[in-house]
Amino acid sequence: MGAKSFTSSVENLKPDPVFGSLLLSKFINCLMYDGKKATAQRVVYGALKIIETKVKDQKPIDVFENALNNIKPLIEVRSRRVGGANYQVPMAVGRKRQQSLAIRWLLEASRSKSGKPMHERLAEELMAANRKEGAAITTRENVHKMADANKAFAHFAW
Image (cartoon, rainbow, N blue to C red; front, side, top):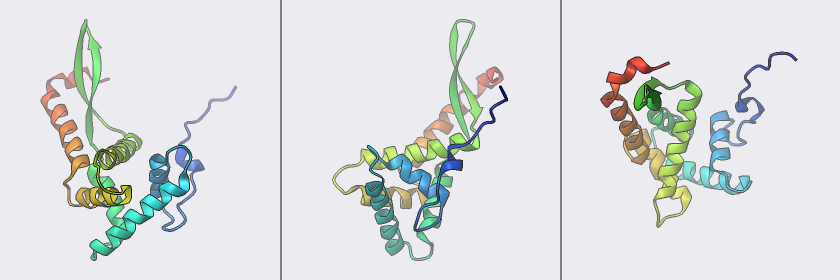
């Protein structure tokens, strides 16, 4: 039995049909409910079309990528049990986890709003994240603040 190498789920991923981006394809898959990919694509491309009309100086795919990069956390806290006590230990976040947390937080922020169609909520959240504001950025800042507050326990990191 040979050693199985770690393979990323991105290897099986095809680039999205409009922009040719693997990251956008991953995002569409994360947005998708019940295997309804066409609906997820309609929402994402509708949001990018709104961004295209509102943000004149940047391409919509650049706004999307920049927004995700702004949301990515550098550090997070993880629970660690030491001597009968649980400590929140700050730890660096790997590249793949940074991306999945950013996508998760962006979708969570978009879904938590109400009163508008999903493509409008997603477009607003993407544009806000591009400007380094909005609910997803607030989540990132809270994670960073928690890590900073618990840096006394950094020596427990493994």
